[in-house]
Length: 227
Ligand SMILES: *Cc1c(COP(=O)(O)O)cnc(C)c1O
Image (cartoon, rainbow, N blue to C red; front, side, top):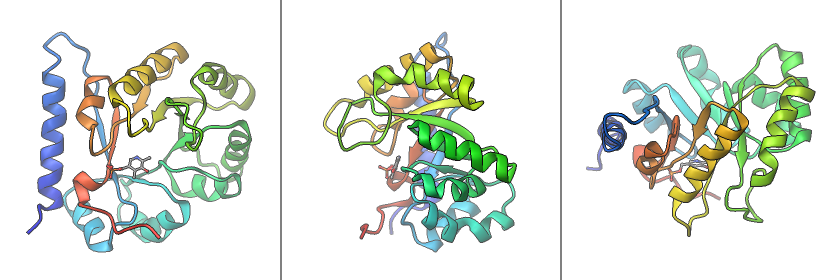
């Protein structure tokens, strides 16, 4: 039998703690939120996660997230849902209605749509700016050089507070370089939170200042094949 969600979760929480301990007694250690990435997972696994006490979940598609969470949201008022996938402007209102955190703000047009949706719905999800730390053509996110000005502009022109930065490092490079870069950028922008680290490298991210890690397969087991 494959390990259960409960066992996987306990192991990950332990490894996060060990990552912090390895930094020594004087290092700055920030609380880390374990975001369970539930995309493409079957209902039985979702319910197992909820039964285990997991309350923070990440999804990368708005419609799929609605299907999975609309009813469960009623049953679990302390749920926190995070959007970690690309957001189209025409889905901004749906995203604002469902999510507590949107981690993939990466352009002004989307900021405008989110601001409008927030004014209309009275909801204000916390916002992260996605940074394309590897400057990969096919990947979403702002270029490294653009982040500081963008974050400032969110404040001054859109009245939006940016809570954190998020990145997905290129698969073929050491993630640590990208995590360190994201931490440095956040400092330069005066931004508090860092969403970085996935199943393969959450411990590395923890050592470099992550305040949340987004873990899917190491928690739930492999996802069903997309498409
Ligand atoms: C799917 C996904 C994850 C989780 O990936 P795992 O390798 O299964 O942990 C994390 N972040 C983003 C943005 C994702 O799309």
